[in-house]
Length: 186
Image (tube, rainbow, N blue to C red; front, side, top):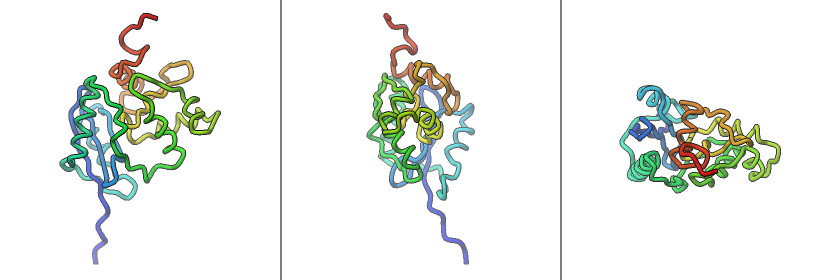
């Protein structure tokens, strides 16, 4: 007697203005997103890693995921979209992280909040460090725009996605965030 098949999710790699990205989804929505790793094969390996009990298989995107990919490609080329309309599968995410990600998703392109401001908005004043740790675990960067959350002094103090702080800065530049990229009058 063989074991029952494991549930699975799907994934796809796609090119963008900043390199090869990847997206993984279940029937409920996006459950993982990968910014460019040093190589396309590294991006593929990351996105295909088992997610909890789900096996992830590379497949052709569904129409909804194709639309999401097209909007992500356009966003990374400078045609900004808040990407909030993309459904997420957050069933494997704890309540605290889900609350942090909800606030991060509400930050429009070109704007930022501090870790402390996010903590205040989820009703956990003084939890800035916990917010930072939560964002460091974010499995869906860009769609959950953790790059829009900064230190209180507006400095870039880390980013867990490939490329680290350089990637965070580049995303803020693409989104024309004041103080990043083009010089401002003040």
